[in-house]
Length: 265
Image (cartoon, rainbow, N blue to C red; front, side, top):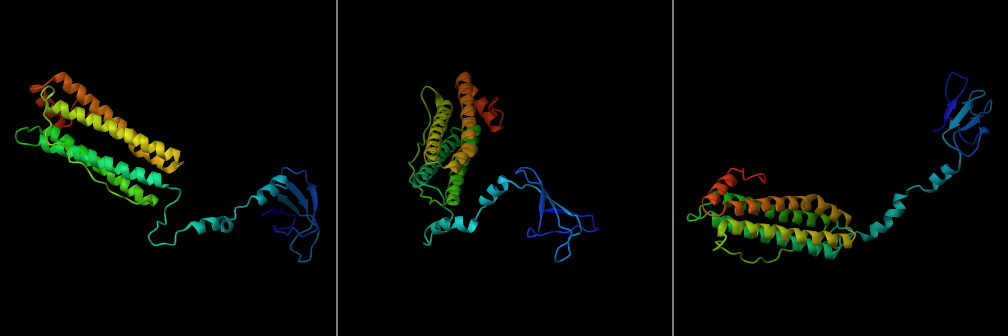
């Protein structure tokens, strides 16, 4: 709104229909307009002054770029599903991305299943490595939570969760040369690296489909944590190789039980 400066005791707002003369109209910067001494409604004092913020080409361009939501939204209205079985939230979420998320859900559940089998093995009365049992139980829970987070994301984006079958994991993890502790931890390291490969493939598919939101979600929620898990388990493997079988494994198990297993913990 223009600011009116007048010698009179009150400030008045004028209409552009008044007979005005410009003091400055160079096309850029503020414009100064002299008011007539009187007008029909008597609201303007004698010799008033109006200051406009701008009076050039830039103003006209800004007016031409006005956002018209009711016009631009017509195309989006045509895309709103009418079938009860269709998702209302889904937008720019391709079938390839939906299928890849379902595949990753299955990967996370399978890894969780193997970790749960390892927990059951180390919790046996004739194995009795409670620290290893605790570690693999927590790892199983973490991978299951990853799967559930992906299921929530799938529903949030308007996809459909399709759970797939899982293979029965092994129940025996003893190894003639390495022993059960080192063998199990090397298996965990291989699983974490495999899971990371699957996540990177999902990230690649999201990029190929120009799904910026999915790319950001995988990067912020999974990839950093996956690298940290690989680093931690790598250190566990190195430490178990150093201590060897026998009493060293028992000592390492005690540290796992109390969350003090080297720098990785």
